[in-house]
Image 1 (cartoon, rainbow, N blue to C red):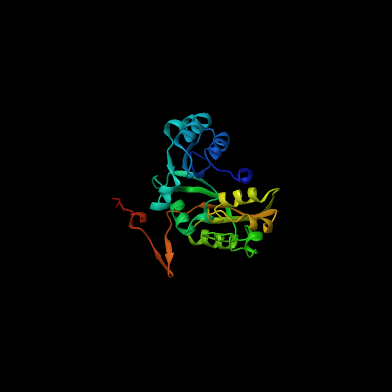
Image 2: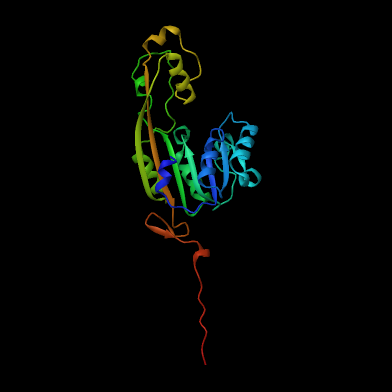
Amino acid sequence: MLQKLDIVKLDVKDILIVPDFPGKHLGALAKRYPKAQLLSVTNEGVSNFQMWSAKALANWRSFFDGSTSKLVGYISTGKFDISDNSVDLIFSDLLLQDLADPKHFLQECWRVLREGGLITFSYLGPDTAKELRSLAVPALKLKNLLSPWDMHDMSDALLAERFSDPVMDMECLTLDYEKPELLLEDVSALKLMHSAPIEMTAMDVLPQKLTLEVVYGHAWAVGKHLAKAKDNVAYIDLNQIGRKTRTDSA
């Protein structure tokens, strides 16, 4: 995701990272944008001390002025604890597949992005863990991705939420394992199975590899003040209508 930002020209003053694992993205983005203030929405299990240490090491502006909130807060309220039009870049890594409604996430991103801002993200696609889904092992209690969207689904959703020029990409990564226990640890960490342990007899049928379909994308928040069309009717806020006065000359 950081490499894909190399092709983007963006004047960044404020960045929202959602989620941060724990402070890892903050450090990388602080190095890339040393003058920016970084706002973090941390994953569950990340302590306040971890984020305090990360901010202290990465970016003094974020240490004093930046804010940190928990992802569970967004999940429960559906809103980021920041004001409208307040960030230039949203950096979201491996989150969307765990959200019941990614469209609502995109709406909230649109709300907090400034005009000309950028959302960049990655998430797990529907072919993730396809080796496990082909097995008939009742003891292996797999969980479906909450949002198994392919990159075409996401591109359509971005356009529907008024984002401009979406760019989508996808790659499949293959992880190889020497022990089935290690594979199960990763499957659990990726929230692809229930936490209940499986019987040791089922270990013998587990594959030695795991496929991750990783979808990448970015899109721009452009034209935030333009009219929004719905049902072939354009709705315009009264505040967007300017008023000209005419002065009669002698």
